[in-house]
Image (cartoon, rainbow, N blue to C red):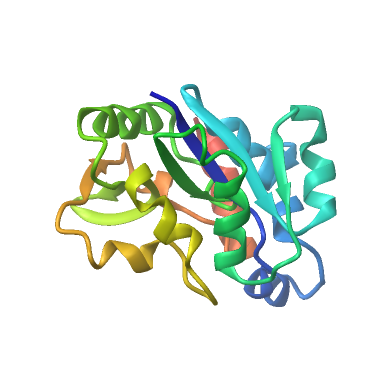
Length: 197
């Protein structure tokens, strides 16, 4: 079974830039000595086949040394990023995990638990959760690929989950796995967590 992982790295990071008081792409902000998006990509283990969906050439450049596939696109909407990433591997994948580019602390065991849950029932979406409350990332089965590709506007994959009667949940190891870097303070919190582990 082949499972893709689309790292969503096309956002503008307006809240982050506003809070920082300076322009700049938050995905390139340093975390533990490397750009945030690089840390996120490095966190994804096998068996996932990683594609980074971005509209930012600077993000693609930062990922160059990793040799990871990058789907560089021009659209500025979430649906554009979903489509670009999924098209990069949809023909080969049985499922696809969508991971926010600013969510770098998901542990390798949680990724593998998501893959195991999907392999046990590859017809249902599976998502990470904390104490039963669903969160990101989300792993979608192949049967939903056509609907993901048909999304438009600001819609992301979560729009499809409302119609699903079965969505598997995998419990995260801790709340830190669900953290994303919407502000410099949240990024600093991630830095402190990494320094303590």
